[in-house]
Length: 483
Image 1 (cartoon, rainbow, N blue to C red):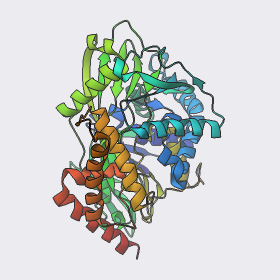
Image 2: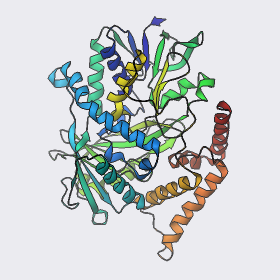
Image 3: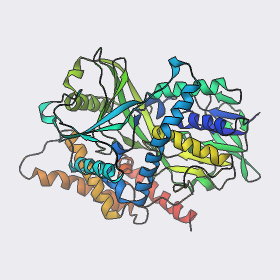
């Protein structure tokens, strides 16, 4: 048994940032960070790390109080980054320092459905509401954008205050800081369960049989957080369940040609939009996919690989066909059943959650890490905890609005995959097919109180026979837990 003051479970950006924030807040604390060094399938290791919140804005986000609360946290996080990075870089040699590459170009094309138009308009709305700087661009004169003729962009804007960061370099910097501190310990292991003593948290069990003892535990293990919560079943049923947003990305070597800024579309087709992120040294990160699973996606599929390459060559730059493939990456974003984050203390004394951040974990990390560190040490934190972990799933949709939103995503997905139907009546037959499928899924789920978010329908559609009863039983347990 090894004793610590705090154990942080999870060695992605959120977990490492939390350990660093705890050291800044209370230098005397003995803190352990637990996680497998390989980080196979983890979100941070495969992240594109686009730095900003406006590019992620959607029409649905602006329709609800919860959505606007998430946007507010993004705006708060953006203000945290300069000082946060200065603090990290001050403690590192020049060769290890991290910086944000400024500038994001958001463009819209016709390779999707109407949801792309709605989300582009929502980005502009959010920019205006917050008096954020942006510039309208000629969509046919954007450096690095050379699409096929039938994928030409129709609109584009430049966001000077958004950009990107190298996720691997950030992880390396945080690792260096932790390794240099005598009070911080990295443990290359997998946590498998939580232990209680006298009704409060007492420690963490590891897969190799060891036990780490600590009166305070922060769960920041991404999609693997759910496994740890399941070791406390009565608590787990009172916290919105976590699922895995599997994503595929690729890294290209473009040679001497260097893309200046992030290029991205608005969010569409259940995903975070097609995006190309410059990595420096002629490297280019390309991503676009997002499919939700019940279990982590540890390897990418040929279908995702083909789709991503096709999108990159058709919609981004036809000249990428001459680039060299460096590698493929698969990562899993932690997605709560209501798609909202889980941040704050639980009813188990000493147990804290930092999970369910979906696509925003790395970008929010300075804000969330410093907030949790302050709260763990007895402070008030940096913001009101509007997404407390122990809660009923937040209702973002009515049955009607969920079906309508899901239909837009499915139609966009079909268009992006270049599905073709007979021209006569196609504009009716194509949406009607998806509409009938969605009606069937939602009718089988039979849920009006806790309406499943459209993103999670992929889990149900992939294994209808098993997952319809799973979700019906899950929501019945939620009602019982909160009776």
